[in-house]
Each structure stands twice: as C-alpha cells, then as structure tokens.
Image 1: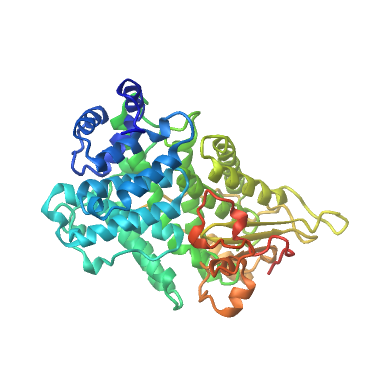
Image 2: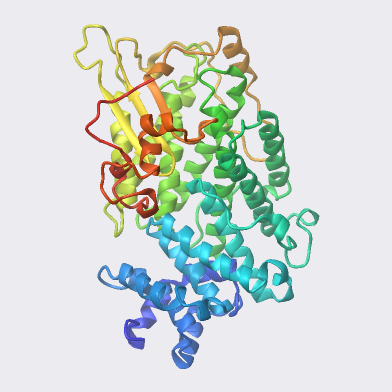
Length: 521
C-alpha cells in the first residue's frame, strides 16, 4: 500500500493503462472475469487489500509511474508474493505471477520472466491444476496461461519446458484440442509443437528432417483452420478503444508466435543449407517467417509512441533481422540465384527495423533495443561494398554475440561482392508465402542442386551456437566456442554465468574473451 499512489493520482494512471488491463484480462480472465474494468478492480482491491491483488494492481500501473522505480516494485512483489508459498498456492497469487512474468518480458528480462512463470507453473502442479483445471473457468485460464508462457519462453531461450503434455488434461474449456478451430485452440496446438521443437533442441540425437517437414505441414494445417480475416490484420484500431486495441494486439502476437515457431523448427536445417542443398526449403521458410515477423513488428512498433511497448518483441525483431541479413550477405545462397527486387525489399525492411530500434533505444528501459541497433549497425558495415585486392579494408570483420542464440561472424576480403549489385538469372519477384498456403521454392532448389550447393560467399559468414545439430557440448566445443564456454561458466568475467544473464544486460558478457582475435570458418 505504501508504494501505490493516492487515489487521485491513481485514476489517470488507470485510464492510461486500459489496453494493458484489457489485454491481460482477455488472455487471463481468472478470478475477475474479462469484463471488469481496471478502475473497478482498483476500487475493490483498495478496499479489501488482498496482498496478491495489490501486487497485480501495482504491476498494472508501475511502468506509468514517474521515475525509474519499476525494478524496486518488481523486487517488492518478488519478495512478498512470488517467494511466499502460501500466496503462490492461490489463484490470485498465480495471476500475480503471470502478470509479473509479462512485466519482466516487457522490460527485456526474459530469463526472469521464465523463472517467475516457471515458479507459477510448479505451484499450479502442486495445486493439481494440470489435471483439474477444467473444474472452473478461473483455474482454466490461469493454468493455460502458465503452460503457454512456459512453452514459448523456453523455446526462445533454448531451455527445457516445465511439464509434459502426457501429464496434463489437454482439454480447453472441456473440449479436445483438434475438435474446434478457434484462436484459443490454435495457440494450444502451437505450444504443443513448440514443445516438440524444444524436445529436439534439448536432445542429443541427429534431428530428423522428415519429421521437421511433417511438423511444417501440421503448422500449415492449423493455420488454415483460422479464417483469412484473422490473418489479414492491418493497421491498429483507434487508441481510445482499449478493448479493440487489446484484441488487435492479441492477434498480432499470436501470429508472431506462429512465425517464430516455424523459424525455430527450420533453423537447424537453414544453418546447414550452406553445405546441403536439400535444406533450401528450410532456408526459404526461415526467411519467409522473418519477413512476416518484421511486418507484424512494424505494425506494433512503427508509429510514434508505440502502442505495444515490449522489449522482448524488440529482441524477436532483431533476430528476424539477423536472418534476413545473413541471406542478403550470401549465407547459404548461390550467387546466380538472386532476386534483386526481393533483396531490395529485404534491405528496406532491415533499414526500417533498425530505425525503429534506434528510436526505441532512447525509451525508458531501452537497453535491448540499443544493443540490437548497435549490432545491426555493426554487421551492416559490409553492405554495399565491393572489395578488390587493392582495397585497404578487405579484412573488415564484424562479430556479434546474441544471447541464448550464438555468435554471428562476418568478414569480407577480396572475394566479397555486394549481393545487391550481382548479376541475376531470374527477374521474377519472390512472393511472400502466407500461413496455410503452399510454399514453392523449386526455382531456387533446382538451381542450387544443379550448381552443387555452395556459393563461394559462405566462408565469409560463420554461425557458432547450440542450434547447429550435434552440438553436444563436448570438451572440444567448450574450449573453442565462446558461447558454450560462457555457458559452462568458464568466462573471462569473474562470477558471471548464463544463470545471471538477461537480454537487457551487456551482451559482450557472453564473450569468453573479447580481446581474442576474430575467428572464422
């Protein structure tokens, strides 16, 4: 109560946070239902003074409070609510944990978001909600939010998820998952696929490409069950309609989750496309997903004051940009098989995203955007430059370390040519494939197979990380891979390890020794 503003100060804050509350209650009606306004909730909580609900109320307004006290408020809730077993053994406590986890993600602390949500999921299991959530609408919404958040955050961070589907009642509102096509069922089926991708990432065996293609068809199938109007989302609704704005944001984020899941499904094979032409489809799928993710990101963040202020989404946009840049610089692509129009469009997308991140870096808590912007600027310096043997800057190199992903290294020498200026054998524009439609990359596939599958540009670009197959973290990798070295706590930064690292912190901490020479394969 001491940190909650007086009611006369609280009222305008409640009005300005209507979209946040509407979005939270649409996704997690919980103990209040979906039709209670934030003002009505605040009046009841201030009268009854339930500690868990007071924590939820504080989270609804803390980012709008003057000053930079959000960390103090989050620590207060962690100490008095999230760390208290009695409170966490209640639905109100679990709701507070869900919103606390979202707030951590909003400020760019995905590791803490994962930890907070995982603690909530553990207590949901102790309460038996994984088996009994269908007994009430309140328990239903709380359990599924914890389950879904755990699956998506685990996928993004490359960590194991918390509970297997075989241990849960997988019905939604009393209905089996495949029986009814709806946005709710879509998300549940999507997180189940995300779980299978996590199983593959955490496993030690060789990933099956046939299995990945089957899963890709399954993604197309569940996407096709939603109406085209759900996918054809465009400009945002009026800012003075929080309910419509929250619904719009929910659709955008659902689509982002879809494309992110598809990218992670194909990513290990896309990374191998430099040497194996059979994986060209995965390369194409990753690029299509990245383009769609950035289109949606521009809708969310592309207008003045952003209608959706979430630093984790900035990080997703940054990783999507990295995929496009890798392709534009020639990773896995045959030089003769180039589409200049598509390349121009992709560079425009990268430029627009870079500018959004530059602006977002000046926002409150803009560390993630700032580091993303700096990394894109660094890796983009090789752009639009043809090198010759006489150039003095042919050995320019860029190396960026992406938390929970790996290291990207780019180097140009006298063999590097600006891809945008290279000759092309095809003048047709490559179309963006929408979910649920058939994908076709026959032209690129046939050309790459005919020419043997390697472009001559690939030796200038290297990826080093645990999304490559057969990365079992053996001793040789520990000694050679800076990211793996850091993950095993053999860092040059004393006392730091991945367990203490979040994406809003200094990404250079992932480097085992930033003074070592740049290495390329």
